[in-house]
Image (cartoon, rainbow, N blue to C red; front, side, top):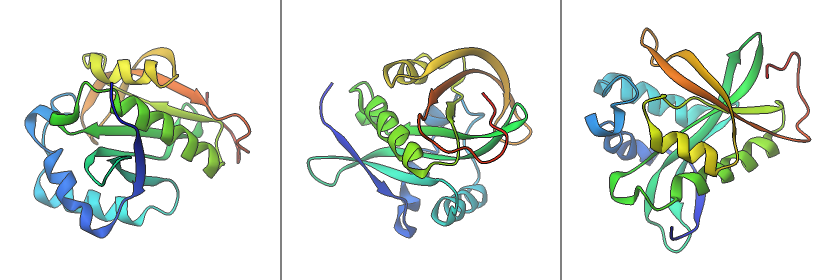
Length: 174
């Protein structure tokens, strides 16, 4: 493992990163690449999130972008939780950067308040993303069927991190 990371809020000029992470190898556990139209819509949502936030993951030493991560609201098991997801560019994988970014996004979600839990839902067939959850301190709750993208069901592991001190608003799912 090498290098610390920092999170840079998603900006209008970050569309290139969505294109880079939209390759067949990067999306094999997510149902495959999206069309240019869907990517453009995703970029608009990322740039305009009013609840939650998307980030570029940047090496702390310098400005090199290594991937993306974020958190957003999701209805889950009768309540509202934060959900997180990430992508690390192939040339930076295997260095522990995703786990560092996941720990940083836990801190961001905690600071945002609102919810007690931050969940991640990596495919059960994706050992690297499940290892990220473990290394970032998430607790494995078990396998679940999860819809992503809309209309595509995959078997995922439900991992969660408690955001101690977060003031919940309404019913909180565990």
